[in-house]
Amino acid sequence: MKLLIVEDHKKISDLITLYAKQDGHEVIQVFSAEDALEQLKHHHMDVIILDLMLPHIQGEEFIQIVRSFTSIYIMVISAKIDVSGRINAIELGADDYITKPFSVEEVMAKLKNIEKRLNPIDQTIYSYHSGDLKIILASREVYVDQKLINLTKDEYDLLIYLIKHPLRSFSRDELITLVLPHSQAYDRVIDTHIKNIRQKIDVHPFRDSYIKTHYGIGYQFVGKKDE
Image (cartoon, rainbow, N blue to C red):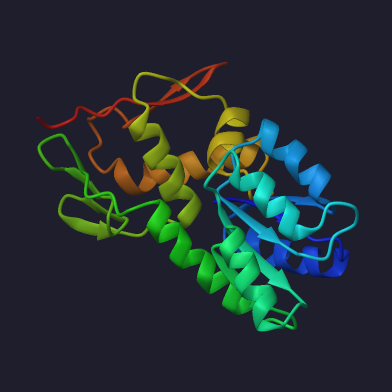
């Protein structure tokens, strides 16, 4: 998911950001409501993590402004512990309210639940070459010749992205930006991932690879999809 963290305490912002990135989320950090509104003009975000006690525009006013143009999920994390303040934030449009001090593990668990609701399980099953390669999206399982194979998270994500866009070839830089933005990957790492994927799914020696290399351009998935 794409998270906008609006917190003027840098250590708290950095802590949430660290954990969020480790869980695979994309994060933009800002330290004022004004900067947050500017980011929302230019970026689609899935969740706002919001402190209420901000410089200039306070969190409550920020919630009102945001609710005037979007239904984005707003999670408040605030030192304001009085019940009336919490109720007020919810009435203004906040979706959740966590009091400081807080458990960052609890925040990450809540984000996982939000992600499940925002991204319902895809029941699609991809099958190629009479079932020689089968991918079950709901369980993230990949079968080759009816045998379950083990792909790393990045390998799986790359394979699925290529499968979902079979008419296009993607450069290494595009794959990093579109598929692995949270990682420290560089262009040659993509080559390694593709090599590993091929070793695991290209088990028939006389059949062309499922992933075609367009030299000087990039990679494209070319498997023959079952009807």
